[in-house]
Image (tube, rainbow over the protein chains, first blue to last red):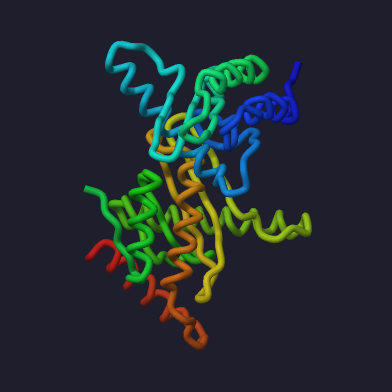
Length: 119
Length: 156
């Protein structure tokens, strides 16, 4: 069965319903391009997609060199918020952006559920 | 060591910024006719000439396809290979339409190149000089300009 972009967006909607989440995206790992997104208006989705995919790739190199295997989940805590990225498969990432005080556990749970849909 | 060389000096800083941010390995900024304004990473004049000619031909071909479809010019073209990707895009400036050809490896991505291409266009448009009145182009002038450009690009 082929999953359409609408199904991806539905999965992302569940992430963005968590309090404090500013957006969620499905991103291609190699290209850093957006497959589907639900974002607040002030978020530059293409920039987030490209830079997060690049970050994930580099973190994967670091975890590999550290003997920890391939990166599966990246949690980046910044001054004003969070960037979370989950590897769904060899091709796609689910990315979530959230405010600093957001419930990371709940967001992660919804990202995993979205990953099941996307996969 | 690869570096950026510009025939048109105002193009150097934006191209260097693009290269450093996008992680492209090779880049060529030129007119749709293939006149090179700046290059990064090429070490031989013949490679620049070939890339410029091929890039200009692709822009021309896709432009014609767009015309047949009653579309405005295609904005960007990406072609991903196993180890390298090619990004080709034409954009308008007050001076002329320009074309950026960028080759990137696996350390970069199409998304990064597209992202920093947008910034590159903004920077180029900002520093672009006012156009000069057009004069008739003679074959002798064209050859002289071409040789001067290649000499500037490779400091021969």
